[in-house]
Length: 194
Image (cartoon, rainbow, N blue to C red; front, side):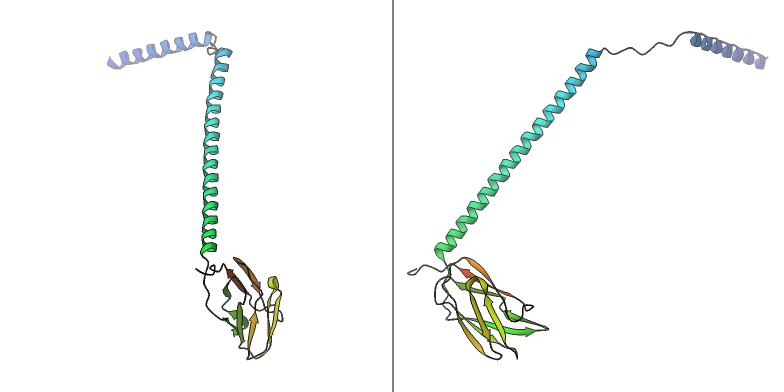
């Protein structure tokens, strides 16, 4: 008996569900409520305004960062100028009669040692270059119109023209271009009487 009443209840429930389904199918579907065009336009304008505010803020931040970077660059340039002016004002003292330079063979290459020759500005500056190889080589500083022949196994004295500093000149063996090059660095000299 219990099974029969359960079956009847189930059938009744299914019948009621079918009836409701039919009623729903007979009713025409309601379109979703339409949003007024004015409201859409108002939302779009609001979002555009927010985007414009963000863009303006980003542009202002970028301009401020650029201004700070420019100020930092100007400060660095000013500091570098002051340092150069201080070095020039103080200058360097060089009490050597002549700067010793070697022309030697290292491995398969001929090179000048030191590769960076340092002198102070002024007149009477000399290089004493010893060619420690078994063949002649050259020494040229194109920026100063200096060009000498270095005989093998001999020392050659090179008197430099008046020098202004600070300056860096390239030097080379003009007889054998593949040889390693050197540099002549001219530092400001300390003013006399200091």
